[in-house]
Image 1 (cartoon, rainbow, N blue to C red):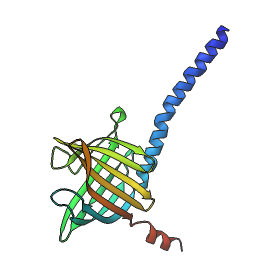
Image 2: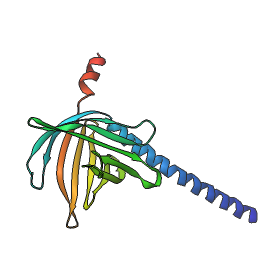
Image 3: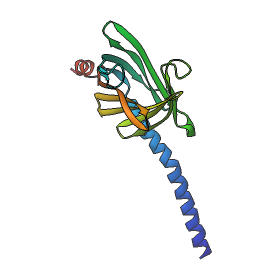
Image 4: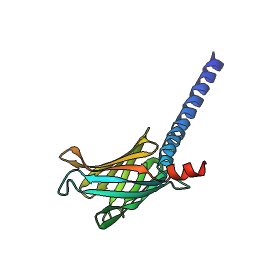
Length: 182
C-alpha cells in the first residue's frame, strides 16, 4: 500500500510539473504564432473616432517584425493625413513574469505611451497602455491572414472609449508571391 501511495504521489507530482511546464510553452507557441502573423508590410485607412479630432481620416503604412531572441513584435512606419506624415513605432517584448512590456513612440518618458501589460488570445492581442493619468488599451486582431484591425481606446469615467481605428491589409504577400509562383 505504501509503495502504491508513493508511486501515485510521484505520478501526481510529475504530472503537475509537466502540466506546469507545458502551459507556458503552449502559451509561448500561441503567442509566437500570433506575432509571426504580423510580420510583413501593412497599409490601410484609419480614423479618429472620438474626441476633438473626431472624423479625421488618415492612411498608415507599417512593417511588422518579430525579435529574433525574444517573444514579441514591433510595428514601424507612419500615418499620413494630406501632406503631413507622422512617424509611428511600437514595440513589445515578453519579459518573464512581468508579461509584455514596451513602448508606443518613445514611451511615457517622451511623447508616447508605455505598454505595461499584454495578452494574446487566439487571433488577437490586447496591450494595456499608460501615460501619467491616461490609461488605455490597444487591440490588434487578425481578421484573416491578410487583414489586421487595430483599435486604440482610452479609459474615461471607468469606461473604455475607442478613439482610433485602423483597417490594415497585407501588401507584401499577394503580388510578389503570385509572380514568384509562376
